[in-house]
Image (cartoon, rainbow, N blue to C red; front, side):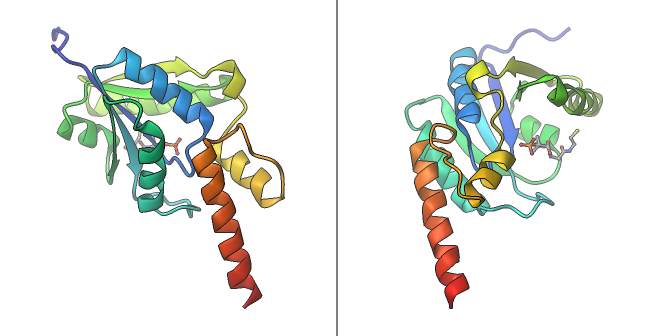
Length: 172
Ligand code: PNS
C-alpha cells in the first residue's frame, strides 16, 4: 500500500467546450481539496468543438486566476499517462445525475486497470448546476435562449462574439 504523497496533485480532465458554471464550481471545490489542481483539456477530441483548444485554454485561464493552486493544460492520448507525466495521484470528475454514473464508472474502472496507482475521485455537482452541460448550453444559445448564469460572464461574451462572427461570415 502506497503512502499518501506529501502534496496531492489532481487532474480535472474534460472537453470544456465551453467551461460552464458547473465545471467552475468543481474547480473551486477541487482547489480546496487538493494541493494542486490541473484542469486538462482533451486535444484529440472526435467531437467537432465550437472553440479551439487555444480558445478553451484562454477561457479557462480567465476564470481560474483567483485560484493560485489551479493551472490549465491540455493533453493527447491516454488521460492516465498524462496524469502520470504530471505526477497527479488523482483524477477528479463531477457527477451530476445517475445518468452520468455508468459512463463515469466505466472510465474510472478502465483508468484503474491501466494505472492502479491513480485514483478517480468523484464530486457531486452542486444541485444548482446539476442540469447544466456544455452541449445543452451550446444548443440553447444557438437557438436564441438565455444562457446567463449557466456559464461565466467572460464565456458568455465570447459566445456572443463567436455568434456575430459566424453571422457576418454567413452574410458574405
Ligand atoms: O468532458 P468530457 O468530454 O466528459 O471528458 C471526457 C474525458 C476527456 C475525460 C475522456 O474522454 C478522456 O479521458 N479521454 C482521453 C483518452 C482516454 O484516456 N481514454 C480512456 C478513458 S477510460
